[in-house]
Image (cartoon, rainbow, N blue to C red; front, side, top):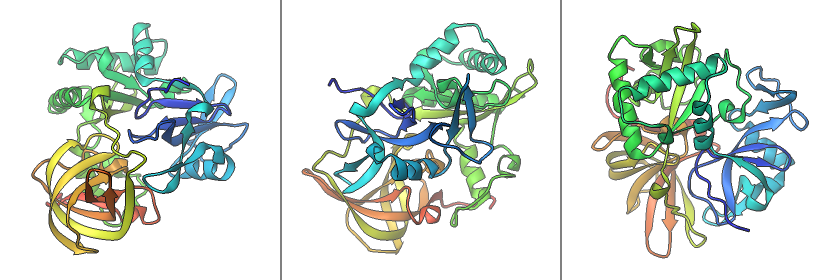
Length: 358
């Protein structure tokens, strides 16, 4: 079987019509680590009013938080596999169980080639036109995921989830968005006021809502578009995904990641080039371990938590709390602090050590 070439946020549809989203870039040769996004009503029903999706007569339900992971682990163990570097089973899809895939880049191209047929697509076209009048960004630089990718969006209520491919294009996008945010324009920063967190159920223990607001605001990729034609205010996210030439799978079958406990530390960021992606990787110069094992070769923070993507930049001093791990490969051994799903999920944090008006 010819290996499939997939990357973060590409979609996988299995033979039982569960929709998965490829998660990150570290995968074994014949399978993909995934998030579980949607399941058809024939096998899953949700009581969450946000979860309902319809595509013609076919009804799907969206999973939130860890619902999808638990659903698959309990009901479809064939969609888990043993991941040698972590020495544990992960949720994902083996290539032989993939029925079809959907590529965000191809879908965006199709949506932009045809005249918009409804209010949401009209917003998409209008916003894209606005961005390209100010920059050299092109259709090939973007993709679309979420309900638009799977054609079960609601034209009057759905948000827009877009992808921007590559570090260079992300930089150009952030620059042009910053220009719009500073003007009286139809594009504004979603996190410019506290309204963005007003109804947010907050569970992080070491990260306040106001700190979150400050960090999110400066990321630039969370946008609100005010569409005059429909009168709608449409939230849009621009999710960074690596270009193919930027992708490198760090964990081969001989790599081992060994858990060493919990750590609290202060560090300085010395490299943030992979901060926009999942996993977000920050090379660090440790300043002080406040709690936990003091180890040599503490080199980086690696985060699978979306809240901590693009969280900090080069030369900034940060506080970090999470899982201490030792990475052992055939060529090197080092330590890292990992932020990911687990029992102490809401204790984890990565934040800039400065006053955020908190």
